[in-house]
Length: 239
Length: 97
Image 1 (tube, chains in turn green, cyan):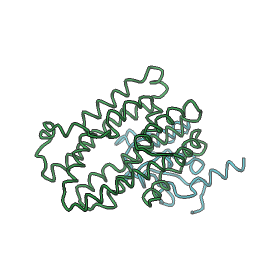
Image 2 (cartoon, each protein chain N blue to C red; image 1 turned 135 degrees about the vertical axis):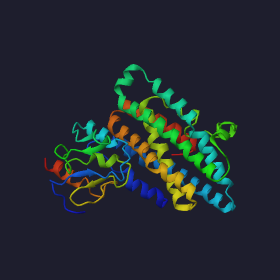
Image 3 (cartoon, chains in turn brown, orange; image 1 turned 45 degrees about the horizontal axis):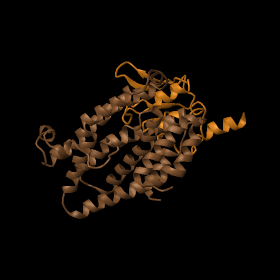
Image 4 (cartoon, rainbow over the protein chains, first blue to last red; image 1 turned 60 degrees about the vertical axis):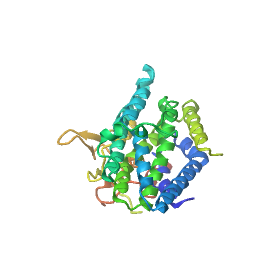
């Protein structure tokens, strides 16, 4: 296992609230499924970073920042997450009001990401203003199903399905950030990732807390299992 | 791990806390309600040491994402992420029941 993943597991994953009803379930899916996906995603990130560093120029940083802006831009975040909030029926709103509040707060978190990507693009001289980005289709389209992309988010409408997305995918974000911080010394890239480090971890904790607290019974575990299966399939992880 | 004293308390390190309120949610879910939002002066998260049952409960530590943001007031040590054995005191109590 890669040491970055080992450290992440030891620091943030294994601890639980004593007596949390869904903790056994979470730890089981972590050991049986998530760790394989996390390991694969981390090694992929490291390979991409190393390839970028080996290129000897900054083009890969522009590509990453542009892709991040497209995937996590203001319009994308508001559109997707508002849709998720509104699609929960009235009974669900009452049952999961804390989770709904968390998601509402995350709309703002995600909008902030686009500013960090923009700061890199501007500081490096690739764009003069955000108006430039508004006129560039590449800043608003996603060539791959990014985790904030339509194809990844809209299937996860149920609040407990979102927990799997938070738990599994935000951990990948955390691991990617750790990989960047361990390999890249560019101050702008580090600024971009340091600013997001605690936030991504907070979203991961939302998933961890939701599963531990709400997923003690099989019917509440099913949305998590279903979504995790979908996410692992997207990563082509064979279990 | 340092020996726990049952009268030790937790407090928020505002230099590190991001005000995400995960600890508030967790504490309220357990109906302990020791974590609260102090309206004055900055709507910041605080811990009511009279209500907090630490080290009997360590739940908030397991879900806090900001390293070093909850500390043990008496020893000054960071409790996020929870150090190995942080739950040991709690486990001993339940074993003794």
